[in-house]
Length: 212
Image (cartoon, rainbow, N blue to C red):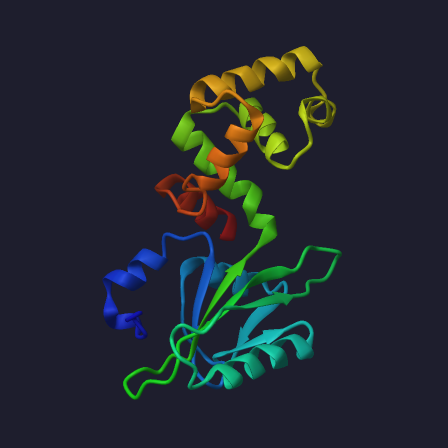
């Protein structure tokens, strides 16, 4: 059974190491628990914010849909499917995205659902931290690896970074050597499967510094 109260210790502490936001919500949509990543999203107040213990969105209809999904899911079995959700943001920013996972009704459980949230603006920083620490890539090599991940191709990556194609090729060869891959498709698969969503001590310290 998933933990449903913040005092259940170890499981909730593990959630603090995720870059993905995790919120436990009751049947009214009130926040019972939010991990560190979720608190950062709420503190930024771009797309979602906390007010009086509840979630509020920039578009009222989006939070109404969330609450409706919780209400519909209340009493559903634990095997119920997750519902995709999105929350619009101002200034032409990509929306927050995620999934609402119903927990089903239980007499000894306050939480009715878990909301998993992803901030697309965070993705680049997350992978930079992970690639540097896991594989020892330089900043230039990280830039090439991320460009390949976006599907830019080597020539487009070189133009984006303002370097010669031969320089970009050298960086990519170094990336292949350090990651043990041989082709771009292998590199993309490795990055997507690596621990890119787990906080490190260094990345957590940098995030705290940004919030000061």
